[in-house]
Length: 193
Image 1 (cartoon, one colour):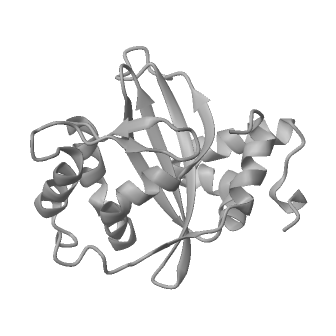
Image 2 (cartoon, rainbow, N blue to C red):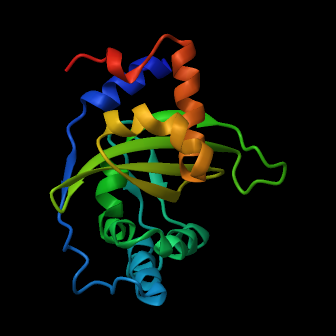
């Protein structure tokens, strides 16, 4: 894992998109159906013996679970659209392949977690590029807390994050991270492919 934010962003931009099947949810859950999506995420969360399933992130080697609370948060965000809903079936692949971006302490005094880590996964689904911005909370265990899905390549999303943060709260944390990277002299247009 690269130590500085600038290096991590450059690594993220150079990582190929993860190819995901946009129809993989079929037969597993129904789109636009909160209960169906929640039941599926719970299936990803617990094995047949009632134990938490542990997923390993390749980039950090962290062991990450999906908790009961995060399962509800992930399912409850189904109103973010069908593309978001289609990513639910791919949460194990996203956790495995996401690239570490940054880490912060909680902003709220009584936060559920001691710290938060942010990850980026570039995906290609239904012949379109998207960026999945994932949040992992840490206490005794690392918990896959939530994610947002942005349409466009990583370069596109990084380039417009500051402008979009004004009108879209999903971009706010990403915009803040990118502002810190600019202080290190990083800008997405500086990356050579």
